Image (cartoon, rainbow over all chains, first blue to last red; front, side, top):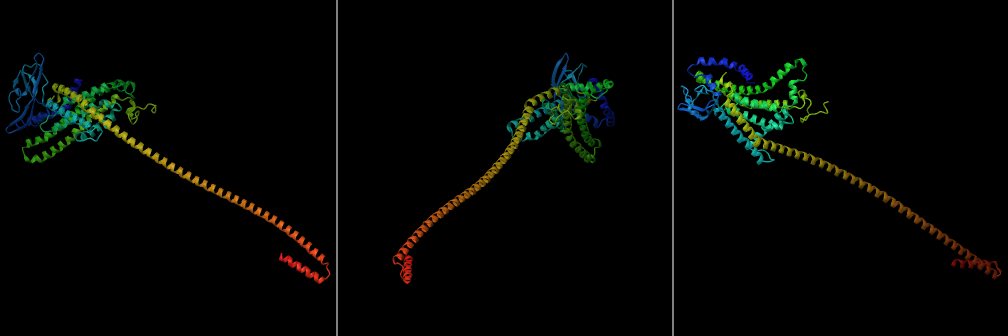
Length: 355
Length: 165
């Protein structure tokens, strides 16, 4: 799995490699847009809010490192971070930062569990979700049996949409079990996509580690809820001649993993690409050092930003929809469902009428 | 491979832990009560709609029943009126027949009485005539019928007597 992942990642990243050296070579000492953009979409051990002429406003986050033999070390990243300043990497407790990567000075293995900017944003969004949705839930307790009010009435149509249009339609009668995961994943992605668009915030949902965890959870849930029809479809695909089955089995088994892999790449690439485009338009100002580009930068930057608001919702929806479809494929009772037969309107299997 | 394409162990770990924690907490404290309340509300709305439909149906049935009852009552009234008319007619006819019969009887009786009276009167007239005849004949015979003028005068005086009677 890991090797497969690396190979596929290499294909995806080819174009990025090709573009990078040009930017670095052209602007050796001045403003380097490639570096700035990669820095912005990447993770870091401190939260750099903004820079002014008088200095930088930075929150130093805790470093949590585990070294086999040495144990756990916890300290503030202030001790090893250079901030925005150039200079040799600071060292503390035998640890230093190398391009935002925590390494030990003696070259031994370090497991970095630091609360980085992304993890701080993750905790923040988790708290935000808990606050908002417990407030929504308390609305249902307060207005029991009555029309929704306030924040409750904003989220109710979305929750009902996920339930009726995503879960019920794609999973069928067993949808209720998967509602908590679908709702959590939808709002987690949507909230973090929007938070990621906020200036100064972290690019959490555009981080491949985050999308990987979500995709793997979808894969685990799909496999855990799969029934015999799902496996029959993989190892004895209906309608395929016997001699072709060995090839089909390989294709289908790879298919199990390419589905969550596509989920991971789609979300990561869409969000990261959006950030790169917005940052690129902002970079134009610094590249040309002229007021004349301001209208272009503003217009395009605004356009892409508004587009990104749409993409934020769309990607959350697509991730949730595809997750529901993969789960639906795994729990389907009748393998004729591909032909849109074998199910009644209400999702119950019809046996008497079909045969 | 650029840094942003390689998943960091720390972020994977924290993402997994925090996401699962959020999933668990939201499932327990948010999604469960929300979905339950939504379902309850939908069920109650559906129930209310179904009840309204049923009430409408019942109303219609009641209305139809009322109309049927009304029609039946109307029919009953018509029937009763017809019956009453028939009975009244019958009664009138019977009364008429009875009255006619009675009148006929009375007339018959009257006729019979008249006949009887007439017979009696005739018998009396006959008797009287016979008696008168006998009287006249006796008187005529007593005067020995000498003078024809005197006879005629006598007959006339007798006849006058008869008239006076």
